[in-house]
Image 1 (cartoon, one colour):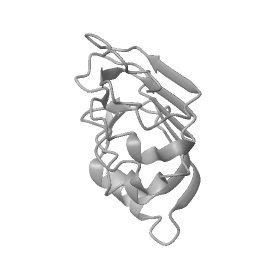
Image 2: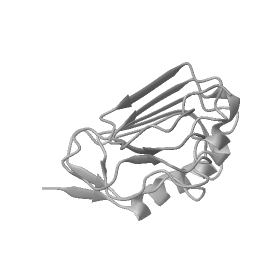
Image 3: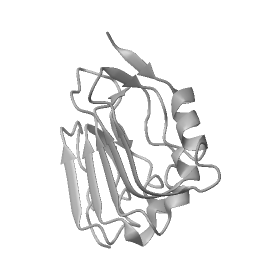
Length: 153
């Protein structure tokens, strides 16, 4: 049986931190059951929070997960982003980094980026993230990697 962690469920979770939005370690791990994750990381959910370490594991992503504004509230504090879907099972959606501005709001503090099932990169995906020390992209589904994607220029 597959359960759904809906967009409304995710909105309720992130809205619970309205008073104090500083979260050192924000983890969503859907290991114990089979869940489809319908939430989106955008300015209305995760973007309202100031997160230092973000971990999302074993998600069955059912839509575009990363949207504009996902890391707006974490500028200058986020150090680590880990998004691991677990088993792909031929889903249509992965982690799309095709917009150059999705990671830009993380600022100069992002050191570690571990993503699974990346479906899109551009030559400017990492252009504002000069301090990243570790990038791990597992189960990548890309037609090509654009020139300069990992360039420091």
